[in-house]
Image (cartoon, rainbow, N blue to C red; front, side):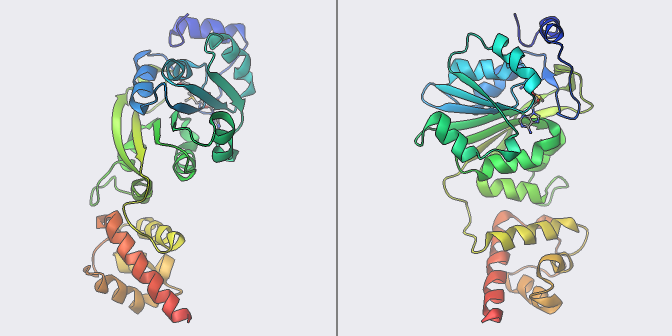
Length: 292
Ligand code: SAM
């Protein structure tokens, strides 16, 4: 039985009366090299554990099981449980839990399944509809050594984009705050059933112990980044009005941008993580002073 063999997939799913759900982002892999590559790239080994999101029929779970000390996979769709019981019958180090990754306390689940001291790698062929919230939750949980996910190629390019490029976005900065990200593998749409309308890519994110910049007020920092990219055609001074207009006012924002050494006509899309950190830290100091 091949978990990526299209005839075997149809036979097993047909026997279990399973139908693909578009709304759950169910596009299963049909090319065996892909789950092998994802499991290899994620870096899990006999001394570490893997948390998988959305095992589907278990093709990636099987590859993680071969390499990891222990694997826990969260699957939302109960209809896949009898399928997984059959396909992963020989994988003794795998446990499947039912749940929605977005509503799961990942820290608590990992402590329960792997213990407090374990090194853990998160891995997934993510359903497209939860790409951004799932990556955010995995990065912010504070429990993973790395996060390796297959997602839409264009989103992968946005995550890894450099300042000043058209793909550069608020999400590029968000991810860079937590991890070093790189596109590890490109995967064409023909590698899935049903075939999606877009190509995919595997992004490997290696978490850092400490962020590359010190941020005095994370909430303000992320609000300023979002504000700058919400209106990316506007100058930085104008776009920051959304985050700082009510506290610093237009002249205060202009002074802030100039005092950080930027041309007031610059656009936010040209600023690096470090630039935004400097701006946000100075803004935090000025707001705190004005509130005293
Ligand atoms: N890993 C399999 C593969 O590569 O062939 C299936 C990947 S498929 C793109 C996404 C999987 O995530 C499906 O099994 C789907 O049921 C599951 N899923 C969808 N939403 C989920 C959620 N919120 N939490 C956990 N699993 C979810």
